[in-house]
Image (cartoon, rainbow, N blue to C red; front, side, top):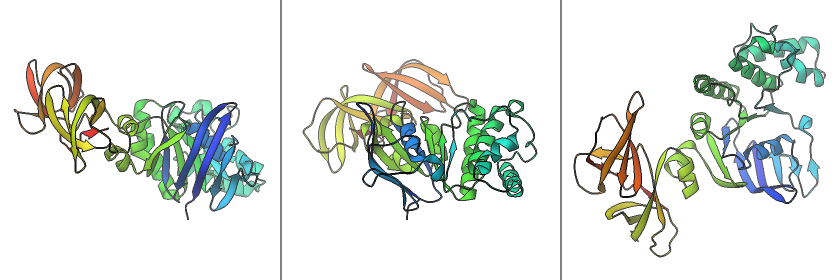
Amino acid sequence: MPKLVIEDLHLRYGSVEVLKGIDARFEEGSVVCLLGRSGSGKTTLLRSIAGLEEPSHGSIRIDGRPVFDARTKVNLPPERRDLGFVFQSYALWPHRTVSENVAYGLRLRGESKTGIGTKVQAALEGVGLGALGERYPSQLSGGQQQRVAIARALVYEPPVILLDEPLSNLDAKLREEARIWIRALIKRLGITAVFVTHDQSEALAIADQIVLLDGGRLIQSGTPEELYERPATLFASEFMGTNNTLNVGVVERQGGRARVTLGQHPLWGTDRTEGGAAREDAKGVIRIEAVRLVDGAGENRIPVEYETSIYLGNQFEHLFRCGDQSLRLLSHQRVGPGTHWVECPPDRLWVF
């Protein structure tokens, strides 16, 4: 049985429909990322799971138990859902020590003083802060404050932990380090985590399952590999990764492939459309790492004109022109002005 089930969830703010029929299932012990741009509904969905927002339709079940059901008028308050919640701002009390911050939820639940002390120390040791219990939040770094917030959410062993962009206040280096230890901690504890982010790199790194939202609708749900390598829609293909999106004309389709033209140059790609006549307004999408510099003409190769390059440390990113369209690629090879040839593998060029 899935740990968390959301069925046909709708939510309105006045006349504005924010969630438009979300269906999703999250397995026990999985890290699920709600991914989307600002305004996609991901934080509203997270808050609905937590009980901080009341949907207008649908249901939410945890371990088979309804915590919200519009039809039967079930709507458990946040404190009865037994969920851990890590806010984007961390929401630590500055006048309380680290241990007091972590213990607060246990005190509200009426736990004994001895039990509280044992659980708080175990939670702090779990996030690597076992020796810092008597410090105040102002005496901690941003990364340490984040760990305190996570320890507070985990201390009463919730079945599901909800995290609302918990890495957004960290600098780039700390964000990369935090992805690893947060995922390792969650997997070690075996709990289910729902993690909101607008950063697709972060979602790819930390998730077992990505739920991609746009405009309050679920666009695609699957493993990071599925969303990156087999996007179901033009939006999904453009949102994930760094891409070239090209205007192409469709000449023919056969056997799941599409023959297109980029300017005057023919190319074969993978057909991601659902039937219909050939048209001139199709989009071709190819990741920048899939485009290859080659030494001359051939199948699925086109000539391009060099514009500029940037050095990334371990490779270059080159910008070329093909007619009035730009084409970016990654290469370990330094190149200069003039005409060059690039190859677009048919299985990596998606035609929508």
